[in-house]
Each structure stands twice: as structure tokens, then as C-alpha cells.
Amino acid sequence: MRKHLLLSALALILPLALPAQQIVKGRIENAPQHKTYMPTFKSDGDTKYPKNIILMIGDGTGLAHIASGYYANGGQLTVTNLKACGWVTTQSADAFTTDSAASGTAYACGQKTYNNAVGVDMDRKPIPNIPEIVAERKIISGVVSTDDMHGATPASFFAHQPQRRMYTEIWGDLPGSPLTFWSAGSQEAFAAKATAETQKAVREVFTVVTSLDDPDVWQAGRLGYLPTAVESGYIVDGRTDFLPKTTAFAVKFLKERCNRRRGFFLMVEGARIDKASHGNEYESMVREMLDFDEAIEQALRFADAEGNTLVIICADHETGGTTLWNGDPAKGNMEGVFVSTHHTPIPIPLFAYGPRSQDFMGVQGNEEVGQKIIKLLMQR
Image (cartoon, rainbow, N blue to C red; front, side, top):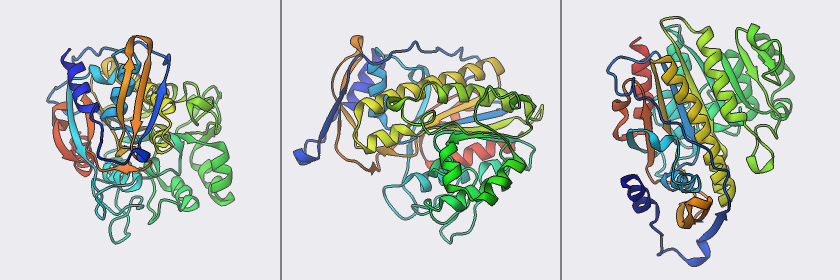
């Protein structure tokens, strides 16, 4: 009951002062509901330093996005079963409202920068990211996203470019990264945006497959999985279980290849929550939120089985000025409202589970989240 009241009170606030023509309503009927996972909480809040950290970024996800998924799923989500939670402020170094590149860089590098920057500071100089920093301690890393690999958030964890739309240059940074596993869209994007020289260099460093059923997968030391544009695209356009399936694969792959004492870092992004919100496509947004929750389940199940893994779930920013209008949770019916097609500066919720989850409670900046992750991993 308390959870219902909190979500309702915070998410059902309509910005009535805005002109009517800026308000866009949408709905989802008979949402595809899933059973949620209740963690064991055996390792939650432990004071030991985690061996592995999984950072899950729901791009564009504010409280109303979570509440939309919560009610559409019959009043339950795996992420809302967690106990440790807080808020994250998202301003960039040069704007009150961030973009994904600046916020992604804040998480990846522990430092704020200007909008459009990928892994560089205000002077356009490269900033070491988490995979690069922790590689010094023999900790391996991975990236999974439903965006293209050159998208702002995944790129922040391996690339260093002054502008997020320098797609060719971003792909060119991939062979030099210390990533052990990566998967994001798409075969088509790789062919179109990466030069022939880069494609050759990527394949020299990574075993690149187009299916996780490829027999070369488990023999690979370092692996790149390129799905098709449909396989990593919108759910409403045909994507199935790519995100939860690849999340489950990634943790298993990294666990088998990491140093016995040092562990791994993994970033998982549900990118199309944001993209659907930019388009004010409420049904698509809710379906993406529900899919992201199923990926969260995979991370939590691994954390419970492994016993020394910290899972952090947050967002880079809120998109759409989203709120709720009406709903019938029992039927999976929800109505939502967007007041913008852009990002907003609203603080976003953060959930944490596992050892040191308590470190992420309260209000913090996105760069502080990155700093805390680096500190925890470097203590190993």
C-alpha cells in the first residue's frame, strides 16, 4: 500500500500550467504482464566491497516511466521490489538539462562535461572511463545496449570524441578499448558507420558474431555480438528478448573470463525508453520499460547466485516530462501524458542491490555515481 501511495503521489502530478497543445496523451491496453523476481536480500547492504558491478541505465527513465510500467504490469515490477533507492541530479557542465552524451560520460568517467561530449572533458581532452580505469586492476568490462554501439551512452564507456555524432570516429575507438564483451545494434550500423579499416581492426581484436548460438562464442576471449537492426530495435517493430537474453549471457561470459579475485564491470542500457518518449509514443515506452525490467531480473538473479555483485539501476535523464493520467492495473491498461518531446532536468530515481547498496541512497549527482563505482571496484 505504501509503495502504491508513493508512486501515485509522485507520478500523478500534471503540469497544468503548460499550454494544452503541448500535452500529448497516450495509452496501452492489455500490456504484456510478467511475473516479477523477489531477490533474497542476503547480500544487500553488506559492507564488503563488491567483486562485480552491473550498472543498468534506462535511458530517459523518470519516475513516471517506472510508474507506468509498474501499473501496466498489475502493480508490480522487479525493480520496485528493491529496498535501497535514491535520486540522481543530471545537469551537465554547460546546461541545466543534460543530453545522453554528457550524462553517459558523467557515469562512465565520474566527471561532468558539456552536452554532446563523449568521454572528453570541457577542454575536449580524453577522460579515462570505468573500463579503462579498472583494467589496471585486471577487472574486465562489458557493454550491452538496445541502441547502436555508436550511441551516446554505450559510446561513453569506450570512446573519446568531442561530438556524439562522430559515429565513424566512435566506432574507430572500439578496437583500442579494453572491453571484453560488447553487444548493441547493429550489423547494418557497423557496415554503414565503421570504415573498412575499423571493421578489420575490430575483428582482429574481438571475435564478432551475429548470433549467440554461433559455435565460436564460448571459445572467444573477447567477443562482440552484432544483432540486426530489427533484433535490437523497438519491441513494437519486432524486437523480442534481446536485452534480457543478452544481459544473462553477458554476466555468464564475463564471469567465466574474469580474474577469480577481481571480477567485472558491466553496463546495460535500455535505450529505447528514451527514444519512444522523444516520439511521445506511450505504448512503445511502456513496453520498453517492461522489457528493461526483465533485464533487471537477469542481473538480480545473477547477483543472488553469485553473492558478491552490486546492481545499480538508474537513468541518464528524464525524457518527455512524462506523467500518468488514468489506468486499470488489473487489465494492464494505462494512460499517460507527455508535455515535451525533449529531455527534462527532473532528478531521476536510482535503485541499488547487493554489497554497498547503501552507498547509493540519498541525492547525488550522476558524476558521483560514477565516482562511487570506480572507488568500489578499485578497492578490490
